[in-house]
Image (cartoon, rainbow, N blue to C red; front, side, top):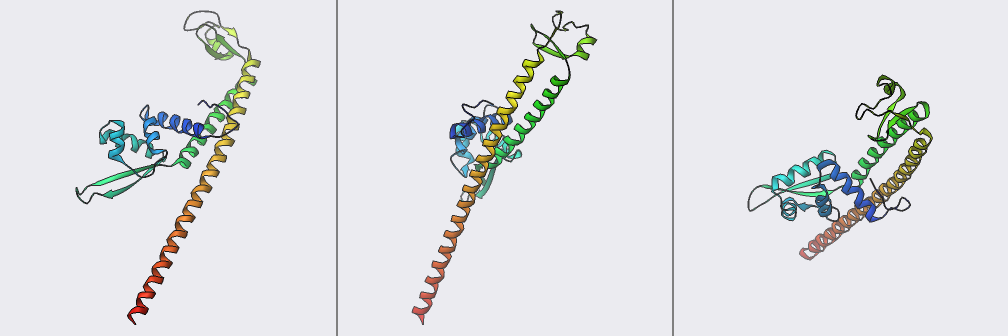
Length: 219
């Protein structure tokens, strides 16, 4: 995953992350799905199909695969005229970012394992084929590349170790930014829910007042 900057978390970075995540799950059709859902809630699946120029079954297949990873959600409503159910889809950015965090953590764990191996073992590589083997594996091949037959050379472990450490540091900084964005989005979601609940209470209060007025008029 590529990022223009690791020192700020902007909309472009968030979009890039969502695109990469969806594309990794469903392929190239993941990008237009994110474009349609990222700024809209409860989008009619037939409108999604129309925008993507795909059949409704193709779109549903894509959305169900994203739903299996818990990054989209849906509500269904019955079409009163036609009698069938229509699904309305939304993107859950918080859950998508949490999945991205898990993938990043897994990548960092793998990098730490690779780092430990390079710190404690010697590696041999073929420059032409760009194949790298542990000393034990290279020994079983008599230090000859099984692909091209050239002699394997001792790898520069110091350079590789510096490269891996630098990559881990960068990935950890990105993780911090993602977690901060999750906290921010969660707070915004909490405030929205609070606002909706407050409006509902005010509406209920007004309805009670109106009911009391009508009662008094009748009396």
